[in-house]
Length: 119
Image (cartoon, rainbow, N blue to C red; front, side):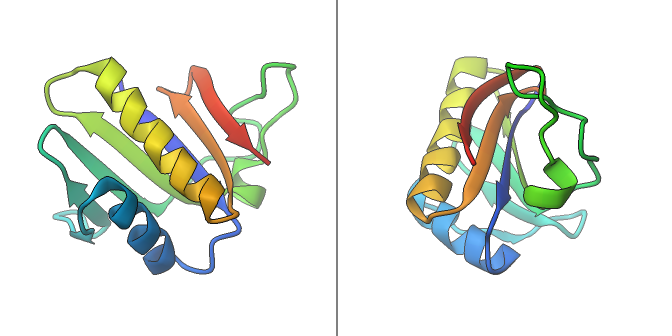
């Protein structure tokens, strides 16, 4: 299980890394798989593009969320101790940073539950 935050309206992945890294008190670097990685004491946060399609996730009212179209950036949060409350808390912090930056964002718990939405 991982938490995910999808963002749109970002000028670049580097801009997203800078804003979120500042919010979380760390810095993204290139990870072993070539995506951007931020290591926190208890969690790993990856950032990069995603391959999800429009309709792979839906709002609570059943409308498809246009992930590929409107939310091309993807943060994946993994708590190293499997503390899912803390993992979701980090995802919400990323969401709040995105919202403060004026970006569109959707935070989810393992793509099953929507934690927050900013359209």
